[in-house]
Image (tube, rainbow, N blue to C red; front, side, top):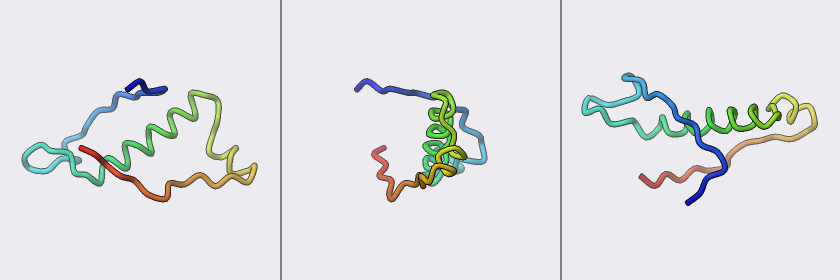
Length: 65
């Protein structure tokens, strides 16, 4: 699959369990951070979208790990 945007992020130790596996809840933080970075790098900001009346939110997430 070819993606239009990718962002490499560092996994911090406190995001993992004792076995070193990332807690599933942290993937939501990763996707939100990536979405913000993508919009910023394409010249769009959430503040500008909000001012124009857009309410950007995700209704659900499904993780396939």
